[in-house]
Length: 110
Image (cartoon, rainbow, N blue to C red):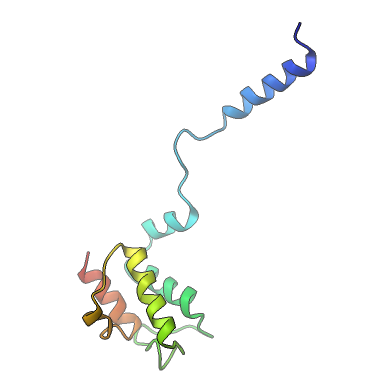
């Protein structure tokens, strides 16, 4: 014989499964990444990686204006590669010294 408790539990489980999405839900950052422009995504990476004290212009130098050291610069390049699914060759890394240079490089690879 099925108890009332078992019946209620079965009903709760069945009703809860009706609210489970049938496909995976994209994360908030993924949804933002898909909707945001290259410029916005690069600026957001710079903010996240370098934590600047204030707003910055696209002409801002990572090291001179935003206070990045060489490790910060390497981590930023790796983040750009991951975010945009690109590879930045070592010989081109040295030319990416400003926010605008990063934006231009990413756009050239798309």
